[in-house]
Image (cartoon, rainbow, N blue to C red):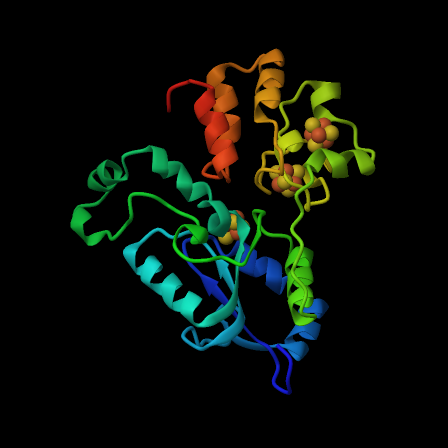
Amino acid sequence: MDGENKPRVAVHKFSSCDGCQLALLNLGEDLLTLAARVELVHFAEAGPTNPDAWVDVAFVEGSMSTPEDIERIRRIREQSRVLIAIGACAVSGGIQGLRNQADGAAWIAQLYEHPGAIASLAQSTPVSAHVKVDFELYGCPVDSAQMLAAVNALLLGAVPRASTDKVCTECKRQGHPCVMVSRGIACLGPVTRSGCGALCPSLGRDCYGCYGPAENANTDALTAQFARLGLDATAIRQRFQGINSQAPVFLAAAQRTGAGHD
Ligand code: SF4
Ligand code: SF4
Ligand code: SF4
């Protein structure tokens, strides 16, 4: 990205709630600083629209849910030097990935008078299932400071660093009382990657895994701990079937509980 021209950046949306784009908009003054250093070529929520332009960095929000999505993400990949998937939808298929375990066609047939008019893939999949992804940022929504840090690293020619530690680490550093130890509440912090600042435990509630699996997540040990807290197999499975249900580590943990699906 050297040279006189500013690096060109695009922000694309797929199946998602727009929350991760809002996280970027919520950068406030930092976004204005960033906008001065890069050329925002496509960011429909903020104004500029040029989805087919070549860019240095493409941020992609949302999961792949329709045949058109797959064609579009391939075009974006061809037109991008670096592609960054942002948020649980783009990285693991998101909450909409819960339908991967269900018969989506049967649901559509029940809901719509003309089911043939609905172009929906059987599975909601992450961006990486279809094209090469250079960097992934988990979170629901993604943390805006992490996004900014990733862009800054790329502008400096460095490789962005992903957080792989566990939420428990942040939680302990900040001195929050452990909701699992002190109140017997099932918390996914021991297997969830850090980056949110242990937001939920700081407010006295459990982590539900929105930052996705941490490195070396010991889900078997946590499953055993949840059982000791009195959760049955269905309740344990449901703890892993949240926003990142299709992240392989959480998916495997849910399947190992052996309970049937709802
Ligand atoms: S990851 Fe969460 S906040 Fe981001 S687009 Fe998906 S549902 Fe919305
Ligand atoms: S509250 Fe949750 S994140 Fe914090 S230390 Fe306890 S288990 Fe870990
Ligand atoms: S504590 Fe867990 S659920 Fe809450 S914001 Fe952090 S990663 Fe997400």
